[in-house]
Image 1 (cartoon, chains in turn yellow, blue):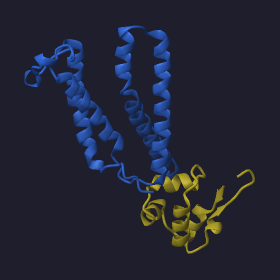
Image 2 (cartoon, helix red, strand yellow):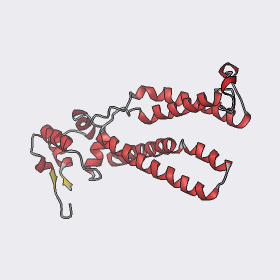
Image 3 (cartoon, helix red, strand yellow):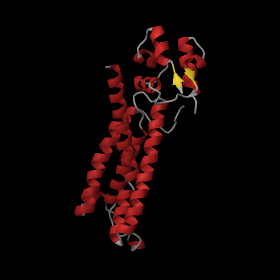
Image 4 (spheres, helix red, strand yellow):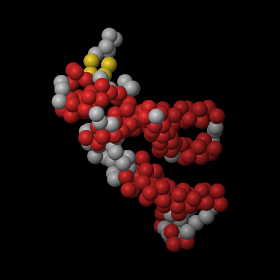
Length: 66
Length: 149
């Protein structure tokens, strides 16, 4: 699954740590999501979308083979 | 995502203290027949049911197990869903390794030696979990630092 978390974070101009604090996870978790190592739960995806004020599909996108 | 079995992170120190104190007591008890006098009991009426008349080994075993359980079930400072995933992966590995060791022991040891190793193997799930989980956490922290640089 592709994600545009880093881009969205750059638009809002917030660090991984600041984003992590907003959605109550550790900074490392944000890092694993950005690097594509971890696919977050629906709850976390919706929380992220709410912070960036966009839809979940604008952040996460299915790839071939998913 | 709430895991009701987990306890506060502050209990981790208590867990380690119990493991050290009761673990040392247990090793002394197993290897040097050390016994605490105040844990002795007298049950003549049911002689033969108990092999010795002292509770030191039972107390040491219980204390060590409880200590390990407290460490395993204490939360991280930030207990999020990725940490839960790491917990699950570590638990899978520890259960797998524990039974793998048991299968190997089954073929390598016989008689009393087998029972001795079975006894030590009761701690394997907990110990392997603690090692794997903490190793995964250290690796996660290192990866995070690398990306930020």
